[in-house]
Image (cartoon, rainbow, N blue to C red):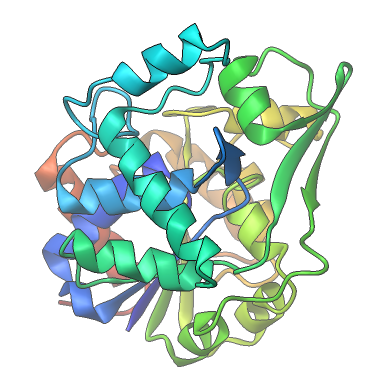
Length: 310
C-alpha cells in the first residue's frame, strides 16, 4: 500500500500521476482538514474535495478547485440576501457540501462522509481525513488571528504572517485507519503540498508525527518550492513569515526528523548538497506537472526514490 499525505491542488495533480502508475486500490490518501470551515451553514472540506474532484475528472482546472462548468445561481441569490461572496461555491459544488453536512447531522463522522462521497464519484482509492475532530488552521497577523480561508481567499494573503496555529489539534486524534495505514505502508509519500498549512496540519494531529518517525516504510517528500517560489499557493509567504528559508532546503528542514529522501526540481540541483548536509538524500527530476505524462513521470521517480517499481 502506498500512503500519501496530501493538501489540495499540488497533491491532487501528483495523485493524477500516481494513479497512472499504481492501481487506485493500492493507494491511501490522508487529507488535510485544517482548511475546513462552515460556509452558509454547510461543512466545506476544500482539500478533500479537490482530491476527489480531480481524480474523478470533474475539477475546474482553471481554478484548481470546484466543479468544471459549474453555475453560480445559488451564490447570486445569497448575495441578494446580503451574504458575503468572497468564498464562491458553485451549484454542483454546493450539492457536495449539502450532502456532507446532512450526513454529519445524521451522526456520521467526517470519515464516513468522505468515504461516501469517494464511492459516489467512482474512486477506488482510500481517502481518509487526518482527523474526525474539528481542527482549524489560523494565521496570526497584524490585523488579528484569521482562519486560513479568510487569510488566503478573502484577504488574498496580503497580511504579514506572524504565526500559524492549529486550533483544536491537541484535542484531536487521527481518524480511524490513519495510523494503521502509516504503520503498514510500503511507502509513505509527502505530496508537493504546502509544508506549513497542508502537511503541517496533518503532522499537528497527535500520533501522526510520532508514527512517521517510527515507520518502517521509506518516506519520500516532493518539494512544492521550485526556484525559490511555489507553483501555486502562499507557501512562500508563510515560510518567510515564520523565518524559514523559502527553498527546497527549507522544506527539507520541516521534515528532517523523519524523512528518508527529498525529491526536488532539477532547476534546484545546486541545493542537493545543503539537503544532504541535513542527513537527507536528495533526488532531482522535473517536478513541474504540466500534463498527464509529466505527472506520471514524477510519480515513477518518487516511487523509485522509495525503492519501489511498478
